[in-house]
Length: 406
Image 1 (tube, helix red, strand yellow):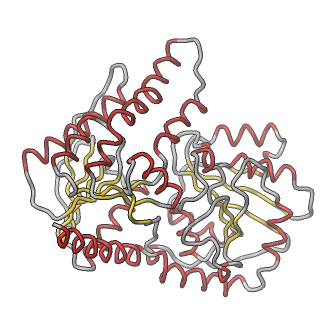
Image 2 (tube, rainbow, N blue to C red):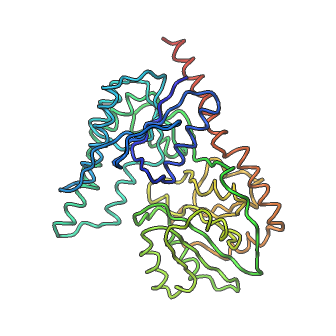
């Protein structure tokens, strides 16, 4: 089976999403699939590697609606590359890059040969821009809302259904997203719940150094925007509300942390919220032993969802770090054997109740045994090899079914 994996936001500096795509490609190849990544990038590079090749995209440097025009340039380059090269393949695996005329035309050209991965409910996520950037009576606000709100929504309305109608099928992170995608497609489009994964061997199991009545929390912020869907406001307010005798501190690393820092200042708990920039993996490996709990996502309801999967939760499992989260996770929720590994909290706007968290954490009697159990669970259920093997089996069945019906 030959598969091309199309990724439209690649770069020389590997992001967490790009690393995910690379891990997916390597796992597919491990099981005998001839898989090659097509990585479209505006970086000044145009070379080929064993698992992927970079494809250069013209960089839009200035002018109005630069971001919107850049996305169009990527999609035009994608369409032109396939028209020029006309590669042979069985399927194309595409991480959904947003709707456009060019993407719809590409899907029509290779009808029922492209399957699409959806990691969010796209229109709800676009609408988060308006919440984070309310429309004001000035030119900058009007232009920003037109570029990042109205034009993307219009593109989804014009081309979203055409794209889904011509795709072979969709893959999503959860039943919620699958239901959303099926409504958008107006057919039984999303056929597989995939979910995020982890390459367990990339992470070392943590060395545990605890202290009595200490609860150090960790959140790694990958987004470069406010990312209201992380729900860190619920965590910070919960820390401010807590009146018990445990020492609770939140460590946040990443970009665009101004809102979290300001909220901690407003609530007079700046000493309990420690913010820093991007942290290297080797430094995180050292810090993780001083961390007691990881944090998942607590605001996905702001994207119209109650269920999803996130990469960092899988990394917690690989490291053996218990964590708390605020949504349904199809790989985790409802598994009684994981009661010492993670705590699911309400998927709503309420402040996190740290009395509940402390009570749950206190009942974990053996943190070392829990860490070892979490890592083994990750190997058996959350590793890329497990998820890609499932995808291959699905494709074999799907292909056989289509062959018999033709």
